[in-house]
Image (cartoon, rainbow, N blue to C red; front, top):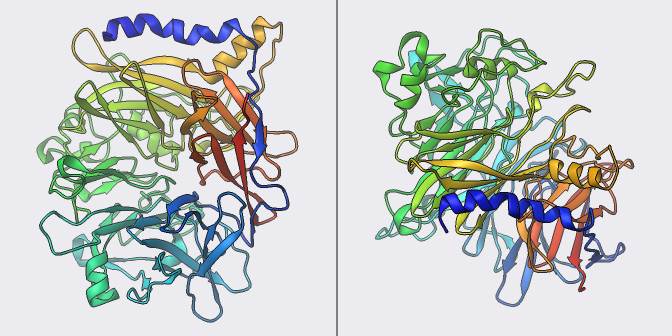
Length: 582
């Protein structure tokens, strides 16, 4: 099927939703009864994962109280647990999703005072990384816990020190295998840090951990690479209202995107893509706030942008020629004919897109996805301002398309309740439609006026040979049209808070996107939704048994079974559902 044929058929795919009931209402049943559903001493911020152990599959859960647990997926019963070590008078806390490397689990965590609540508001005392031996169900004695203590030299002979109280590891840990032909067996793991409670000064820190060196020589050899996104020792002021000279954190829950390259991650062309959050941009000083970076092993940035085109004032407010020159950096920009933003909540009159984004101070940055369209590779990167960009891979400065999927937050008489949250915070989900990439982007809206939800974009090849987006559906439009056809003039305002990541799965053999709408119901409980990929129709709507849901913990989808995290009064819960047979 040609791209032109696909574009002509898109309205037919979407219009299929108007010939049936408003909602299909596929029912779910609990896999674990209420009495069986696991509960934890603190919220579960990390996404659960399945570990195919030799004896039986188990579900690994990294709980907020600093414990890694293995559960029986069928019964929810606890099989074993391992607590992260902490000094006397301190208690461990896990937020970021760990990464499994063979039979080991690499866990980033921090500590708080032993009597303090283990919530995201409690100030960290120290940050650590530990390794769990999954086969023997214990902390791996070959890996002494690594305490993060870094002094990074920057320009002017100054030093930036890692400040535990100002940083937090939120993003999924990722790994790369060792280079082919090397004597190493484990490879490298990557831990990213952003802001804790957005109190200045903070920075973006990305650490590469050489697991083989750690194993052989101890913690002194564990850190093999450090990226500091805002290398400024003087942040001018301290506090929540401080300026944005520093910042540039890694705050997205999905963490870095691994681009394995031509040899499944074992070659020299393996790369990481990392999205940098709010802060101050200055290319001349290597301050990369609001940017997308492509990194080599060692978390090194090979070639940013052409210095001769990005000097002077263009270092802090780059123009088109500078932005187009970037090889391993992408900074948001407009397509010809697109207008600069004019958000109702912030005065951006006369400002460029980048200058306005700096004033909006949006967070967090969003992890991209890599796509392949009939042999051509590209990057899809949503940004918190409600847009999605389609980028080239040879040069990240190449911009194929930029589509808007969310309105600006706020309206007359309806102020945006959280301007800096933006309207996109989660990595997209990826599927295909007739062989073309289908990208599902989740949006949210902290006002009471504008609609939000999922948007399905198809990447197609245009007549001129370039790649571009075509919108298949927007879930809010689909639901509103169905309700209007049924005589209703009011559609529910869904997605007022950051939702979870959407995850592709099935419901009665139909391809769907699973997502939790946080705190959606009048009771404050979250809603587990499944939206059909071919038309955007809601086919599952399951209120959670308790709690609003946890935005950082994506649904764990296995076949037609879904596990979700929730939290009530600081206590974590897991709920597990499966699609019923027709």
